Amino acid sequence: EIVMTQSPATLSVSPGERATLSCRASRPISSNLAWYQQKPGQAPTLLIYGASTRATGIPARFSGSESGTEFTLTISSLQSEDFAVYYCQQYNNWPLTFGGGTKVEIK
Amino acid sequence: QVQLVQSGAGVKKPGSSVRVSCKTSADTFSNYALSWVRQAPGQGLEWMGGIIPMFNITKYAQKFQGRVTFNADESTTTAYIELSSLTSEDTAVYYCARDYRAKYCTSTTCYTADAFEIWGQGTMVSVSS
Image 1 (tube, chains in turn yellow, brown):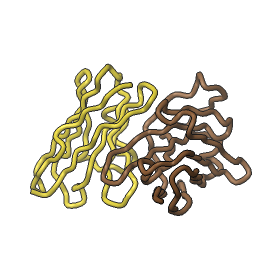
Image 2: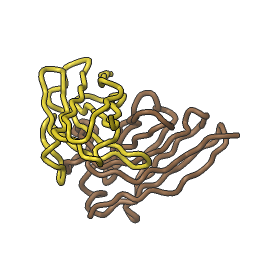
Image 3: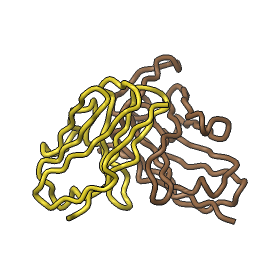
């Protein structure tokens, strides 16, 4: 199975600053990569699919990019509601696999 | 607004089985695949498998094969997961999630994977003696 590795595990950022989250796939996955946000006690929310396409209703401050098997989620200016855990997921191969998550916390 | 509504939380004994439901709309039932994803307390997300409800086409993660069953009831547009031989390690929130792309697929070979656009609210299953 494809292993998704996210870094860092925790990212401390001040409101208004930029956050950069990384996700690496153990094998090529084309652009079949999604990013989710999860807040405590809630289901995940789809942010990005196809590595760089924002899902419906997702603010423009969220952007995704890719370089080979390295994927990046950037939050350009963190708002209070953005402090959460973020997961990447590959959907290029069965079984579908998620990264371990990055917690974005207030600095 | 599309919603997936799951059944309520439950406590189960080790060795028993649990069944969780996921009520969908007619459009979702007919045109989309649903996956089941679980999350143990304080842990990450784990894909268990998926189903195309209209055609009862399923894919299972190897880890759960033989212990999990997905099925669906067209009359109520509801999908189900049943997990047997429960242990404490099955204690988790179980989510159903809908693919973001509709797909017309009548066989396993055309069942392609997707990101998950719509999620149920989750069902907490606790396994304890």
